[in-house]
Length: 216
Image (cartoon, rainbow, N blue to C red; front, side, top):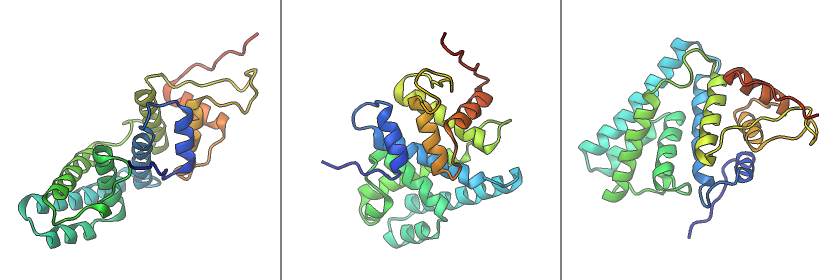
């Protein structure tokens, strides 16, 4: 039985507060980390530079996938894997973990083993397809796209709509809902430390959510 080992302690702790289905914390952590990596890939670049960076990584992943389909030589697959840039390796590892479990990585695979090669081939195909999709909202910034991704992932994982509280709640201005707590943890992991109130405002600006009225 594998033991779940968090990659990001902050995100892992925030997910545990969300009361997820048993054994799924590692999966949702991995998915959130992949969104953070996509955010980093496009951060502080204009749209042209971002497109070029994503396209370059996609071409490299496509080379890995093509090598796995056309050749059974472990050395050929290893050469393509070694040539991948760090972002490309993150994307392939992410898709591998989604399919096979949060404790596995490409480093655990034997490129000479047909079963392991099929796992890697599938992960590369999924990463290539996923990276080809335009990240985020057409009209939003990279940060707002990340906020939107966190909200969608939270709703899928918990089957609940993201909840935001008021700074004037009886619980005090520092109280955070499970969603707010997760959003703050994700923004911190992405290198964008955010206060609880700032996270609320960021989410409201993304969704045009109405500010909760204080209780009488």
